[in-house]
Length: 379
Image 1 (cartoon, rainbow, N blue to C red):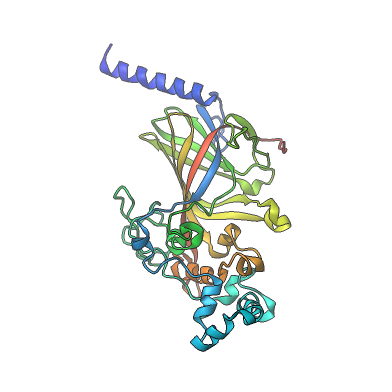
Image 2 (image 1 turned 120 degrees about the horizontal axis):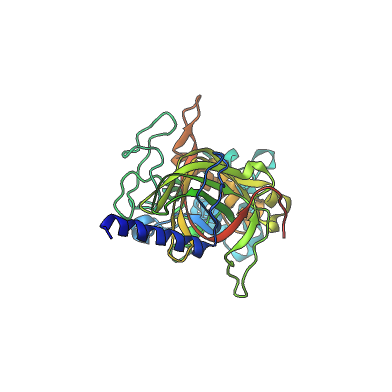
């Protein structure tokens, strides 16, 4: 048997083994192009979070973590007034000011319901953000130096942990020193996630090299079945969401086992937090010029990244909500928004030139699943 024949045989065995591991079928599954044949692979993304790289607290956040609402309030006080308000007998007055007056603007809006109303408010200043030069992410604008383009503003670039140049992830730069990611001790936390969604890869002829595959990214209305220990069970069947707004499809290719997609003009995924009632049901995560880089693991799981540009107020679906976010959780949403506005690097406003979106990269982890199109329903 020739070397070429041996190579082809090994490749065929790997392909068959992968199909058996994932429990997939070979069928005409293409929806972008009718009649496409090949393996169809389905996955449920069970975990996603903003790609955060830890350069160490001293490097990333030399000034410490971003201040809370209360800390920003205290910084505005004259020393004598601060001393007076912090006396036990003045606790009620102190709380009434920073938990109400300080976070309320004209028209009775507050820093978390409408943070952009406090843009450039010196009481809620932007932070310096993460100062490290290394970050997870991908090159989203096609430049290595971060120069302005027709659809981006000039900005500093990161270097990837593997030495890749030109990494864009300004959302991490803006939030990398917040307590939501650093915690009180400075250790990196996970946060800023997207609820579970589906990825379907169609028309796969060779899982190591394929010049054309089709990739669908869908929200689902179905409920995840968990194991006794709370983990997600693989090989469940999920319908794609009933709302076509959450049906996202693009083409891609496989290079050395990595699935790389073309950019989507816009990608929408449902955002749902049941404890927030109607507010938690009505929002979505939006990515513009979104791209994915994915790799199938030996155990059949999926890992990768989703990158794109997110409108600034859309970031609110990950945290902004209500007055209590500021008065109880002590999160300065206005300062957060002002930081996003300073570091925004996408989609310049044609009149002001100020960028209105910010580059963001989320890490993804998924398990094998079966994806159903057509009739939908929750279970």
